[in-house]
Length: 83
View 1 (cartoon, rainbow, N blue to C red):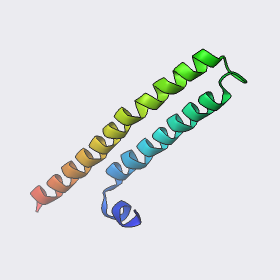
View 2 (view 1 turned 180 degrees about the vertical axis):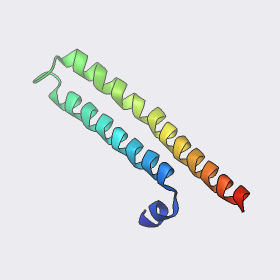
View 3 (view 1 turned 90 degrees about the horizontal axis):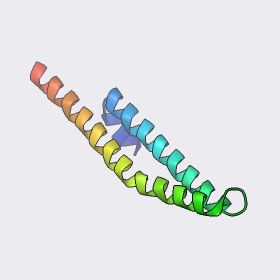
């Protein structure tokens, strides 16, 4: 993983890392809601929100992948066209 992060440009690296931090936050929030359902939070509301957050992870993952790959492609293309 370190080799991959060394070889990509700074904007793509920022999008990649920030995106995965957002995904981790979504997963943590979903887990907290699911575990606390019935004890800390209203059961049906917490489980419903937890499921919605969990289903949002996949599209966010695809968006992070597409954005970082697209930015890296544009950076490489710009670098190659200037040579």
